[in-house]
Length: 404
Image 1 (cartoon, rainbow, N blue to C red):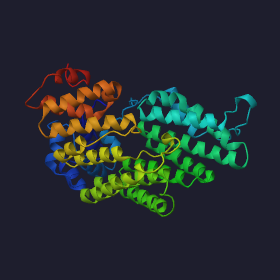
Image 2: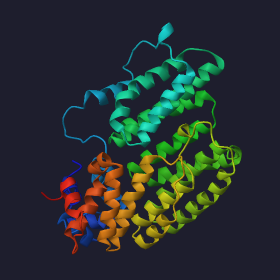
Image 3: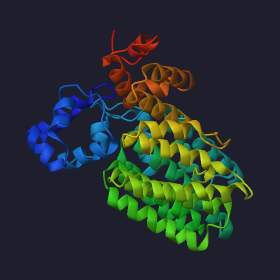
Image 4: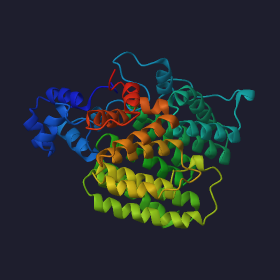
């Protein structure tokens, strides 16, 4: 469950793997002292490189250690009907008849694009429940558009199907269903190839790289992102759309590099990406940025803050965060991640009051998101166990179930 302590998950998974604490430390390359402190709840969180190393030693996905993502919890019970409907939309039943146009029920391509863009907006706002409700209908509309029509209309239908299935992949990964996410993304790439849009397969490759990161396949994620970025840089990074897709891939490669332990190499990649945002600012904006990768100066800085926090450089993270001016097209989910990372950095610096102030701001911006996020719980747990309890901490601890 999302509220289960990281140490309890680690202990349970270690026993399932038939490993002692010393054996896990040896297999993962993590000190036995860290393993003990986590399992004894003397540490409430760990850096992502450490989590990836522990997951590798245990032979599990890193999400198994992180707990449920901020969407719906896994309870061991049957999946809710909404998720079953998403599964059915992504993977139609065998021998199901092909979609057939039904006159007035056929959605125009312009309306379909708007429908998909609106669904992506909900996703970036972390409204996963609403996306889960809408997605089966969105995919059905896109699949119909891809199956009927000729020439350009058919290619645009395939493009819509690729974007809809890409969203299905993202949602499934957020719900902790990584294999379903990869199945959706594989179907999305097939549709993208038929759309003849050179940017769409690269965008979906970025999504696949993210899924690989969640599975602790860091080398696979890095190789895929670099390969896709190299292809775009040669031919398609001269437009705002192409540069945004290329930049997103560079950021993804940097994240995998950092989680593999090469922080300096990742920093070089991120600086290259940040320099490219200067060129982006001088280009005409995309017609609908919601349908293109998130990439701007703000998003690069936010990711740099995250990597600094994850690699025990809280002072560097806070300096980077102070210099951020939010671009108008930065999705709300990125803003909430930034606040969470800043709170973590303040905690690591021993500034409990700064951490609480930041968490209170996050709670005002995204209360539902915060309540379900394991990192928010870990930060408040660390603050509650610390020497200082500034005003506001008790309310946050009660809100997140850290104390009664």
